[in-house]
Image (cartoon, rainbow, N blue to C red; front, side, top):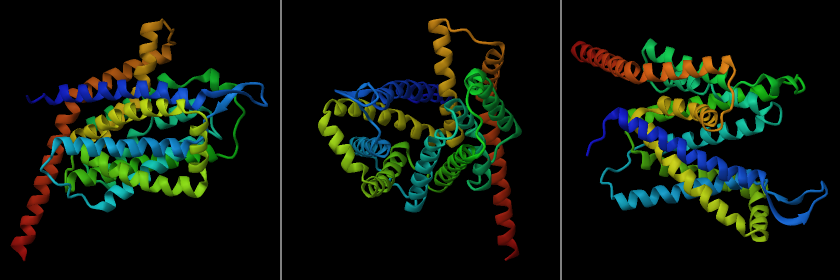
Length: 340
């Protein structure tokens, strides 16, 4: 049964929201919880998990195994013709974006990081045009910019920013800018991949996680974190159960992300992942009766209006623009042939 495009987009989006909602709960349990019952110098009981590279390696390796199993079960006849360099660059820029974003938290507060990363669709769109050879209509530009503004207005928390010391180095902001640039490069390379060989979501997931696993293997071994992580897991075997749950939620979530990229493109995927936190907070308002200030209501209205307008008008116009660009390219090619 063929699912309509709008319904497929909704299914992918809701699946991403649900999987990463559970993923966030388990991740917080691992990174913010404590293991064991030994007292520490700070008076608290239990050890903290601090092995971020090893944690990401586990996720990437499990995602690779999951994608391999999916492709084996599916027995897809279409072979992936994508150049290996595309996947290697994609994995590197993806990891650099994540590392730069996490490192920025040493110099900027978490609310600033959230608001900064909310602008992710903008570099994805700009670099998609400059490098990925993608074309968009003014309606799509307006809708994406409105979504970003709405998310920023909704997520920004003045009370948390006001009490924090003013940073003068600008290093945190520079790292956030680097993270956004790497996000944009990842999206641009994915657009080139879609245009050149159109790999499936499972094929993209397999290859990118393979390269991410290889890169992180070198990083964890050279930094000595791999050995420390194994010692920690040996002391606290309950960690393996948490890691298994994290890997399952992450693998399912990433599967739908790559299905979204393969079908609708990196820009649509970046909009979905950007609005994910927005909808999480909005659900807490509906379920638990948290109060929103007028600025947040205005931001919510902007996001919903832009999402619905883009759903009904943006995609169709983008397809027309792409078709027009293709026909122009074909005409130019015909002229070259005639002249030669």
